[in-house]
Length: 107
Image (cartoon, rainbow, N blue to C red; front, side):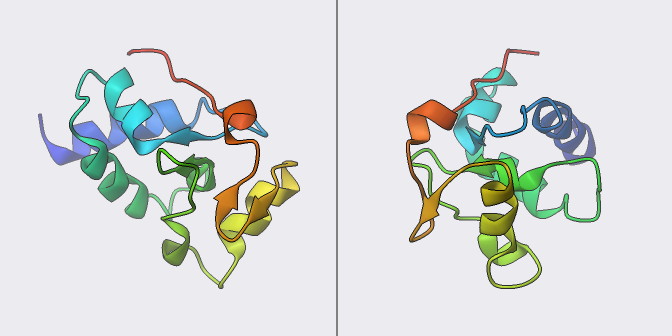
């Protein structure tokens, strides 16, 4: 499978994340049937910032940390986007992570 095809499959899942919810790189990888490819999901997210319809701010690490925030314009854009959806972030950590976590369906 080419990276382009993999990235498009990642974006298809990310577009499904509901407003006010987040998921993890690993959960996306698992839904794609490639459970060990969380890092590749991260690369896909890093490459997604020119795509207006991919809510990359809703993808965090397995502990709810905003590990991708340096790939957003401005210092706190990722946090601001999440807070606009009612998610509280303290020290780059999503509060009540389990409450906000969305598990993608396998595709």
